[in-house]
Amino acid sequence: MRNLKHGVFWPPFLILIASVIYSLHDSADFISKATTLNSFLLDKFGWLYSISTLLFLGIIVWIYFSPMAKVRIGGKEAQPFLTKWRWFTITLCTTIATGILFWGTSEPLYHLHAPPQGLDIEPNSIESMRFAMSTLFMHWTLIPYGIYTAAGLLFTLVYYNLKRPFSLGSMLYPIFGQRVEGRMGKVIDAICLYSLVAGMASSLGTGILTISGGLNTLYDIESSTLSLAIITLVIVATFILSAVSGLMKGIRLLSDWNIKAFIGLAIFVFLCGPSLFILKLGVESIGEFLQTFLQRSLYIGLSPSDKWTQNWTIFYWANWLAWAPVSALFLGRLSYGYTVREFIHFNLIYPSIFGAIWMMIFGGTALHLDYFGEGSPIYEVLQNGGIEHVSFTILATLPFDKIISAIFLVIVFLSFVTASDSNTSAMSGLSSTGISPDSPEPSLGIKVIWGMTIGAVSLIMIVNSGIDGVKMASNLGGFPALFFMILAGFALVKLGRTVETLE
Image (cartoon, rainbow, N blue to C red; front, top):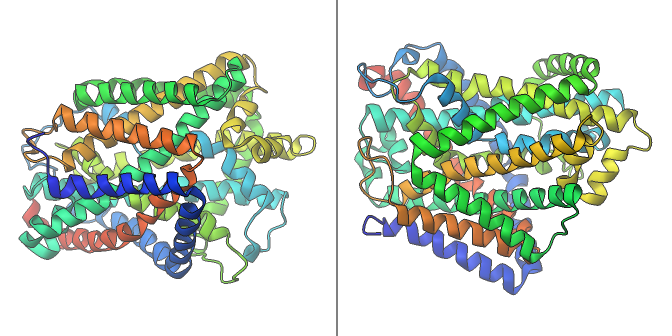
């Protein structure tokens, strides 16, 4: 604990504890105030979220074809410490792969039955089905990974090539110089750290509920405070042990298991599900996605009564932005020894392709069962039982459903452990002094503190029905992160125009 950065650690830690206490004292009022503020920000700044996230992707495309793409991260003599397979598995499993497990089957059902008013699409129609699938591509492929790629690429170049400190403030060094290595840098680190901690707590809470729903479906284990506490304890203990073992051990093993399970499950569902329908809908939806990409990316919804964009697209962009700065610390560490163009391959292109295939298979299966089933049975499960039951209901229609559902439950567990591992390491590094390429791991004590804090907050929020409040707090973190990322975009462009400083 002697290596603790007090100015970075204590502000987000104390604010998080205060938020929990307030939520426990008056959960309804806390959620109401957070929801009102969140709606105000998304309504007034939705246009800025939309255009900024699209520009981040545009910057990455420009860099891909610029001289900067040939720059080697860490210098000309740098050698990778991860194989390309390991790099891909860790990158995929530590970003938004946990999200596709839940939203891949549930989100398209919402869009099928309630598309945006402004696009004049008839609900529960073939047209709304194509819209649902093409929207999955927009929400889970190029733009979200573009946000992470922009943040991660900037950090890795500033950290490894410009030799700046392990800090989010260092990402703005190309603009502000050494001024970001003082008080300004600590303020940036503290704000982004709070955003990620709240985000991890809400994400872990969702995972705990999903595992609880799976145990209830498969083994009739009722959800209770005790069962939720045991699930939380097992997840937190596992990811703390993995984080303690360091990047080269625990997380590499977990990611390898995780990605193989992902691929195996996807192949099984495709072969045993409505394969031809998945291919037809997927191909048509890819065409619609490409044809309407700019329009849908910038669609805000001018009608005051049309809240679809706020509830979905802009909400997602705000969430990804909240996570992006701190995730950049971890993603940047993985790329040492590779070129900038390879960084874009493994952080943008390959994960986007994987995400699109996953959404085609699982989203297509959900849409087929709902649209061609009797009385929209899957949508009824979503409305009555919640998101945590949708995937298991769909898997129950396939051969060997008990075995496959149990495997899916294990994948959910591994996904949360892997993502939590990476982010705990990044948060702990941000809270520590002395982090450098030669000494990349923070102390054991800081990792344990953050791991236990996240687990405790998640459990308290679930037991007291206040997890929606933490989700709002997480999403509100995307607002300051938006402006940080806009500055980061300018910094990345400046680096791209002064390539010689990186070599």
